[in-house]
Length: 247
Image (cartoon, rainbow, N blue to C red; front, side, top):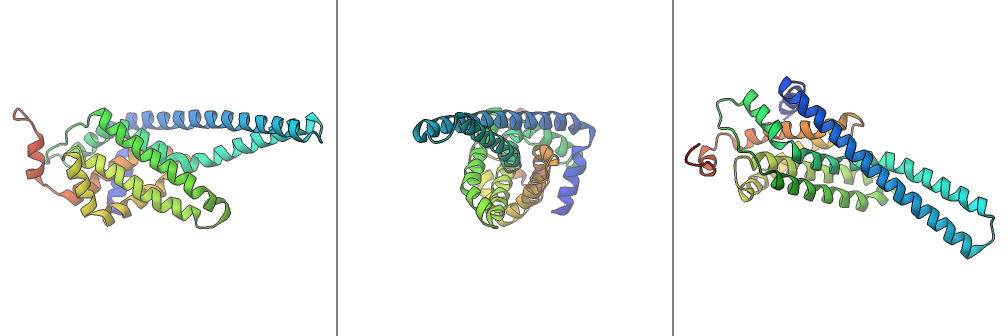
């Protein structure tokens, strides 16, 4: 498994994936910025509205004090969003990775498995839907675990375990669906659930590193191509039925 991780890191820097890596990082960064701006404006608006309501309701402090409180709360919300971006990266990774499934997988398969049959490109809608599904699950887990992160020491552990499962599952199934129908890819993942989960832990560790985690979509997809190959081997009998008679 560590060998697969090292190969994935090396693959990211090879010429075929350099442009994909740049596009992936830019898209991930753009999503983080857009989400951050939207949340900051939402929380700032809520803080201002709350301060206005409190001022009108209580009437025991001057307007300047309530305005200062609203400003302070908006600043705290901004700082919280910047910190929260680290925790929201798994969700962004799932979305961004879905756009580059075939670009990454094709490059890795050609480089390391030239004798094997290559996978078939996933319909972009299928890949994006899978990515969005796991992104929403990641956000849900984040909000469930947030109180534990703030008030207990094991909240970060909850996030790490959940991200290991979600990231491992999503990227393994994306890699497998290039060769098998979705139900078969999910069955293959279930039969190797422990191995895929531990592989997901490596991705979860990677995504927890600030700045570097912008490259997670490419790393995760390349890594899971190697993991899928090790799990599935050369199961040609399962690959051939997906191919058209002309291929």
